[in-house]
Length: 248
Image 1 (cartoon, rainbow, N blue to C red):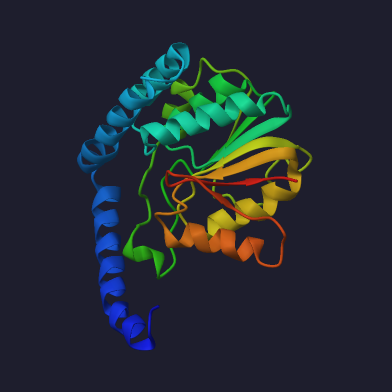
Image 2: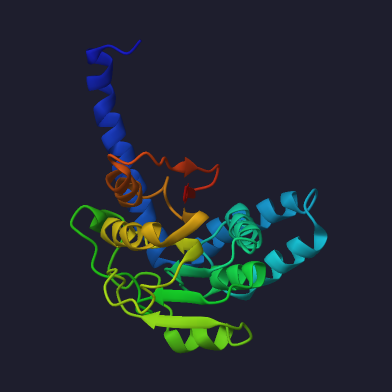
């Protein structure tokens, strides 16, 4: 059992770890080369392992899409997105993604889910200005990809609706929609919380919200904690950096 002395002694080490993680994330966010060497290498290894026991046609799709554009999804995360989209196809309704980057996960959702409509929200200019605490890990403009480039990449996919600008949950143009799957890759607390507040009440029964970076970025976890406070729902944390909510 930890004593008060043990806890106090551990605090400096935890603080040092948090600072080191923030510094590493800054390097990761700024350097495409670092992302290729880390996430890219991890994705290839994970997809090779998955290929040993998953359906070959499914793996061919995921490998192809994952290789077409830079993505921040690991191999397991890409598989999870595609798998959830395939499953949620039976629920019907609309799907959405907030945080599109270069369009890799959007294509996985489109190919797997074949939704009636897939709403894609992004500033298409990178991250907005993070708050003071989050600036240790991220900066304004990180992960930018232009709307025109993403539209060109996804031009072979049907039923896409693009929304350029900061997602605030106001004047989204899809207030009357009902969703079976929503993928969040927002990185910041304020944006993640706005997404939860907008989408969760509009999820169909059995609908799923899945978020990237839940276990990597404190702001994302804090947004879920704040939204779920006083509610009976509980987040399902996955073995990857992802977590999800299932609408009752």
